[in-house]
Image (cartoon, rainbow, N blue to C red; front, side):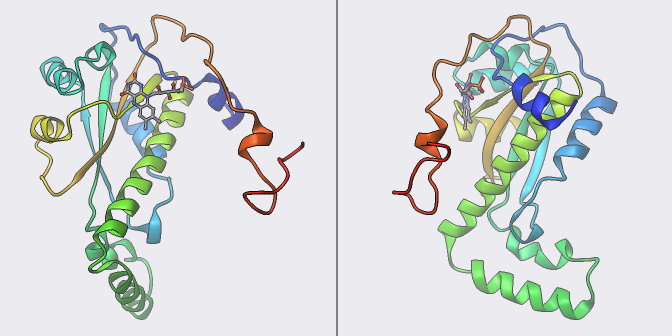
Length: 206
Ligand SMILES: Cc1cc2nc3c(=O)[nH]c(=O)nc-3n(C[C@H](O)[C@H](O)[C@H](O)COP(=O)(O)O)c2cc1C
């Protein structure tokens, strides 16, 4: 499947076959592709908890405002991000020369140290990008998905035993659709959302 087809096929699916089990091999394939996503300074702020156990999915559903598709999904991926990933910068540049590694690590620490807002923004940005990559990879593997932020962060953290200083960026439910999604309710026209040269510029193609 090419990217274009995957982008058209991907929709936020709200009803999954609760009896469909996803194998670990497929999960590995999807996650390995997702990890190709970009992250600021290659910091890879992300860690994931792939929840396939029925009891755990039920607990996540309860933490996610009771949303049924969370309980029905074959797997719910909890996308976690570390706002202090910059402290691991040297590891993320392991393949570089010692000089480059040390120089970059110093620059990265200098940029992030003391700026909690930037640390959080970056963790969420990286988490969001990897979530999209994950959904496209799942589409290619024949799975449907739904991204969710409708959950109580503290409860989700408790269920998956995520450290309290990490961020639960998103849940991504994966499964096989049992119902076709309704057509998109509305898409703001391209010419209105894409401007040339400046925010006040002409709309692309207008
Ligand atoms: C950040 C984010 C949070 C979302 N949270 C939820 C959610 O809690 N529950 C849900 O069913 N869908 C959720 N969605 C899915 C959106 O409703 C959906 O993407 C949007 O309506 C567009 O539909 P489409 O994804 O099928 O194109 C979320 C999507 C995003 C990007």
